[in-house]
View 1 (cartoon, rainbow, N blue to C red):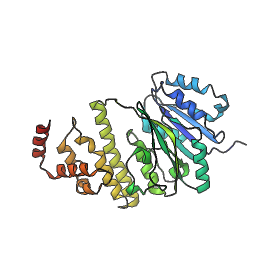
View 2: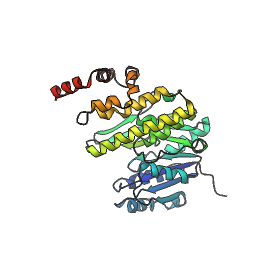
View 3: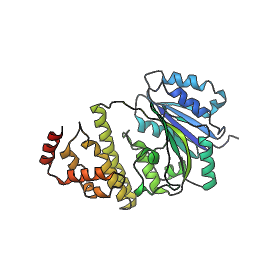
Length: 319
């Protein structure tokens, strides 16, 4: 009789030939030997990613039965690829891994053990952030996960790569990745998951190796796409949360909307008029956004309450 799958590891990838071999190797070296499956989703790669992946996996023939390969008909985007992997997953828990990152060998075994010990729907661990200047640990400051209304909008709290999630929680609540929104796609799913369960456990260890790319410039078109996706996600999440919970998560929604439009105030792409007109209801709550340093809150508050033409004059003087 086939053993029940406990964890499905979903790895979407697109043009990551330099990194996917190391990622796959770290997954294959997991100490959780049984009851795990790996779903690799090729999002229409045009480089040698698929060949590099096959080469890396060939070194682990004992894992062959646990591996499934999926291919999209072209480059469909992150949300589509994650959703496809999620729909094909069979595990009791699901977890994602970015194809340019790596994981520590004991990650999934210890997270699964914690879930079975506590009955948690979600088990989280910390990050090892790797950059050109070295590595650092990013961990939770408290042994308990903050409520959704208090959670910082950061990778640690809203990534789906450092958390195993009970799959039934997703399917029973009819949750899917918001189609076509490829930035903040993790946040869009995780926020809804956090809204429907408080059975969360934290392991005070860093098991996920997150690769931070420093010094990469972002094009104007890319910045516009990120901004557009953030605004779309804020609207989509707001509608979902209000439809299911009324005003319970208004504090989170207001902070999310305010954060989504911040790029409109960055030097080089600053558009004060558009910033003030986008989600204007959030501006009256600026001083309550405790996750934003006081200096910035005061600056945003001033921008929100100063006539636009005066702000334009000040911006010209400061250039």
